Length: 201
Image 1 (spheres, rainbow, N blue to C red):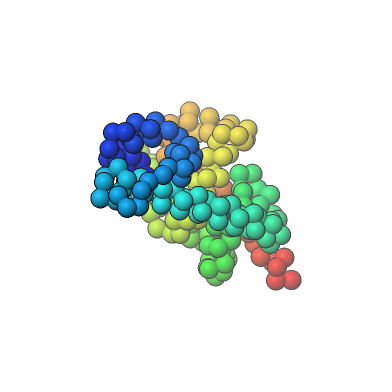
Image 2 (cartoon, rainbow, N blue to C red):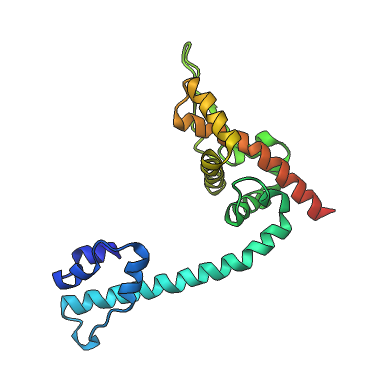
């Protein structure tokens, strides 16, 4: 949508530049054009912007409805997982999907870490001990762990203390995130297994 605005004729572009995403969608949805003059660049661009704005609005409403429907389901199915610090309904749903698609990978915490792409791979050289990013695994689950990590880094006092301590040890931010994700897997694994066991008993 911003690309269309940037390429729009000047009168239209002047109305729509430097707006927030939400305001831009609202403003574009309220635009009017003459469907008999779509040969005119301004009317054609306006028509495209109106169509995009309506699609964004419809999809946003659909997402809101689905989130409202999904939240109580996830909280009922996985109460221990959703109770973890930094785990909201969307994150929990992703973790449940990953675990549900690969139930055989829940036999150990390490297996779940590999499944989520959160098992650091040794990349040491000489006296320098380092681990590199694991680029395999379920990227959706890895993103869920990343979301939890960012939330805890900002709001969880224990995590902040851990970050401070490891920073003084010389770890970079990417290395800290990798360590933190692996640590979070431990919490997630315990909660997921407990939730899965509760469902099957």
